[in-house]
Length: 126
Image (cartoon, rainbow, N blue to C red; front, side, top):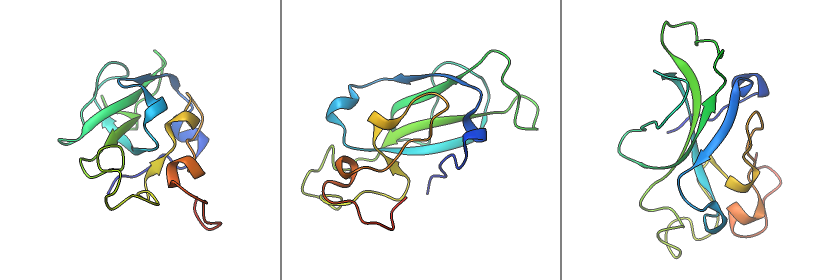
């Protein structure tokens, strides 16, 4: 399972979010907070999943304490996500690590929304 960025300090060195697909049609993306990216900018990989977008960092972004490792958000989809299977597992609801891509900005934590949930968002969902 992916780990999301937890606090604003996790993403304070972001300079921009790069989207590889039109996010207007995508109700949610999964977020992975990768703490061992080998560069601050450019494309990233996350296992064999389809990358929908990623964060780029400021030129002076610090490493994570490990030489040559930087923390970046990666946004991705699995083949069984609602975007690909509207009547599948996530017909309603969304994965724990999912957020609405329309709420994602540099240095701003993404949010679950009714759009991402595909219905009324339960009160206990973060």
